[in-house]
Amino acid sequence: MHTVLITGAASGLGWELARAYHTHGCNLLLTDINAEGLATRVAELGAEHALGLAGDITDPALHQQLLQACAERFGGLDILINNAGITHRSPTTQTDPAVFRKVMAVDYQAPVELTLSALPLLRKSRGQIIAIGSMAGWMPVLGRAGYCAAKSALSQFFEVLRAEVVRDGIRMLLVYPSFLDTPIDLNALGADGQRAKHGRSTIGTIRGADWMAVQIIQAQQQGLQRLFPDRSSWLASLLWRIAPSFYYRKMSARFAAEMD
Image (tube, rainbow, N blue to C red):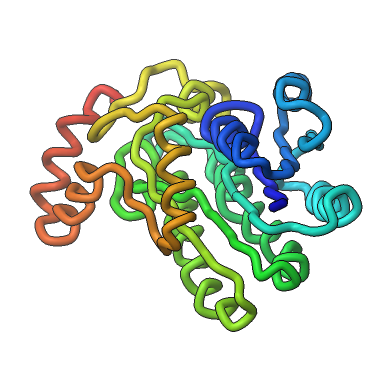
């Protein structure tokens, strides 16, 4: 029976992944900063095969608690899913630098540090790392400078790590969703670090988290290394590379309301 560790598991994509892996008979270790929400989710799944540890994913002490729980409660770790994340919606020049630091800490530094700490367990199981990136890491999106930077850094780090841990039998799946219907955008930070007061602009189709979870599990089972689930966003990233001026004009028109 596989053991799966999922960060950001109390809602959105993390919760849908937990539900999906639960139906596959996996042991689950779930973590989220929302302690009350996490406890509700664990109770819904049942305590026999699910354990929740709430905390701030940027805290290295939480990482050690999670990995210790994997080893002691379930005997190891087979799949690490770095899903927890935050975003912001704010013009770059108007944004408090503390917002950029927070986004980078959650979306980049935390998964990097947790993954490095988990490598001994993953080597033993010849396990797998799944990192939830974003198409925002492949192309610029107005009002998301910190998020784009963090997801780009995440992608580059795990692409390098992929080549270095393959000799240990550890597999890697990088996932690049576009816009999903999840709480990450409902809780997006504004320029002052408080919740953003304006709605989001989008590119492509807004997908449900349940749909995305199914795509991820299928990609894992198929042994894919990268998953680009939204074709229209993938094409937009190609447009950015081959015709950047045209891309900027289109994006600026689409996101104009957020810049006012």
